[in-house]
Length: 334
Image (cartoon, rainbow, N blue to C red; front, side, top):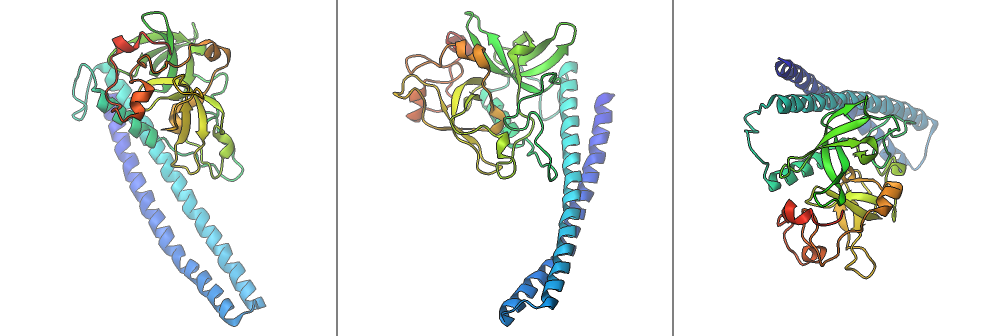
């Protein structure tokens, strides 16, 4: 019944979103005439090579109108973004409800294990569609925007993606990508599922073993302080894997659509770091203090990395899809 209700609400929101998109185009078309007048006025001023009181007054009025038009269009776009966020939230709630109920839609038939390539594609799409934080003038980016950590009392919701520090079969600890199942306020512990379905493992972990992932991308052009800076130490999701490793920021994003360029710790290189690799904003998190400092370093080229081949093999062009099995890789330190 809840799934039917969610579908109905999503349909309503899509209709409202369509209307807002039409309003945006209408508003843009309406303001076009004013922008053309501004351009023509500047051209006349250049031709006459003077700025008369008449032109000053006219331009002041034209720019005041243009500012009001831009604000009106911006307000419509913000409403559209709110609708999109609500639709995404409902879709996520529906997915979780279906997962709990053991139901699958036509595009997601029952399966024992998701193929690795499909999982990597979904994770890449999720990173690309992470919403960009767009605040009003004077607003500061909220927690979980870019590099800004969650507040101390934050509790991740079911379905949220997190980095989880878990123990492997051999006792070694590693940071993996996981999905929150539930949180118990009585025990202050999470239940999380390993995102990699090969293991189908569920872990019960304390809050200190969970790091929520960013929920918004930070805009480098307006909120550079919400990004990790060059040479800052982080934990980053190694490309085409579901594990986080220690890394150094090589280059922060320069545009909203850009990724970080990071150097992963790798003892097989003279300087201790791999060549630069791109990592999405959603895949870079603060490096936790002493616990991470005490963890084992990333494996060198003499061993296999969990869910990925040795670093040197990667740089010789070996496909990232040829990742080791969990049984092989779980023998390695995080």
